[in-house]
Image (cartoon, rainbow, N blue to C red; front, side, top):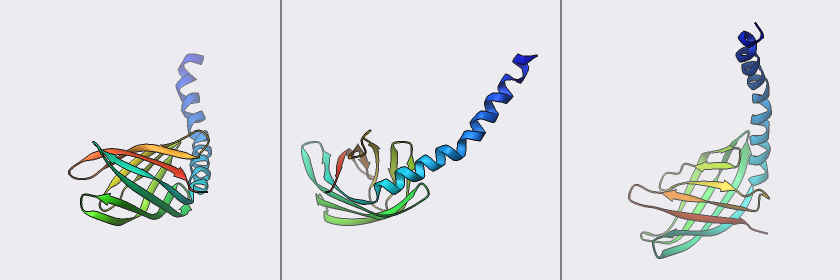
Length: 128
C-alpha cells in the first residue's frame, strides 16, 4: 500500500518546492543587473558585445545589448523578456537571440547567439 502512495508523495514534494525554485531564479535575476562586456564570435570573425541589464522582475530581465563589428555594422537590440532558469539565461531579441550559462561564481556567462542566417559563440564578464 505504501508503494501506491509514493508517486503522490513525490508530486506533492515537487509542487511544494516550486515557489523556492522560482525565488532562486528571481534572486539570480536580480544579481545579474548591471553591465556585462565580452565578445561575439562567428567562424574566424569576432567583435565586442556589451549587455546592460537594467532591471529584473521575478525571473525576467530587461535591458539592451550592443553588438560591435558585425556584418551589418554596429547595432543595438533591446530585450524585455529575457528569462532566468537556474544558471541558464535566454535573451530573445528582435535581431539576435542568445542563450548563456552563468558561471558558478556569477562573474561570467558563456553561450551561443543565433540570427536568422547564422549562429556563433558569445562570452560575457561582469564589468567592474
